[in-house]
Amino acid sequence: EVQLVESGGGLVQAGGSLRLSCVASGFSFDGDDYAIAWFRQAPGKEREGISCIVTSDETTYYADSMKGRFTISSDRAKGTVYLQMSSLKPEDTAVYYCATDFASGSGWNPLSAGWYEYWGQGAQVTVSS
Image 1 (cartoon, rainbow, N blue to C red):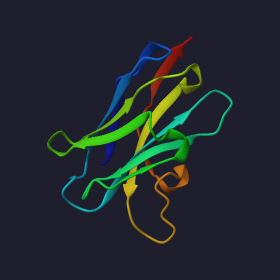
Image 2 (image 1 turned 90 degrees about the vertical axis):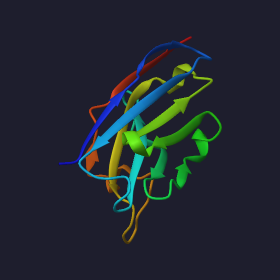
Image 3 (image 1 turned 30 degrees about the vertical axis):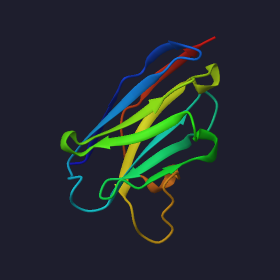
Image 4 (image 1 turned 120 degrees about the vertical axis):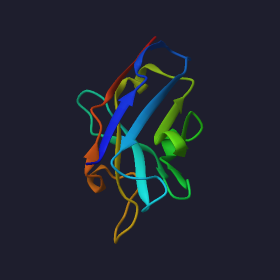
């Protein structure tokens, strides 16, 4: 069974940094091509894609609006994907989720929430001004 567990959320002042972790189980990073992506959802807003990494070759994707302040990476030995966030702003306040599914198939969009079947429980990130 595929499972994802996020951690690392919390309260941070504007301009600060946080690193989120997503521990994946139920599949191997060395097996089929899986995409592990980060999304966020603020109150009253739609879930938006931040970044994605493909487990087999570590190809990364970023939403244009997220480039520069967010960095995705993985530790294959630990089965963990990280999201390093810097220069945080109050508008970054949201629940952050990691998600995974196969990174292939017709119409695959690495930053489309509708593609992903498996989701973590979410981690709250609050940025104070």
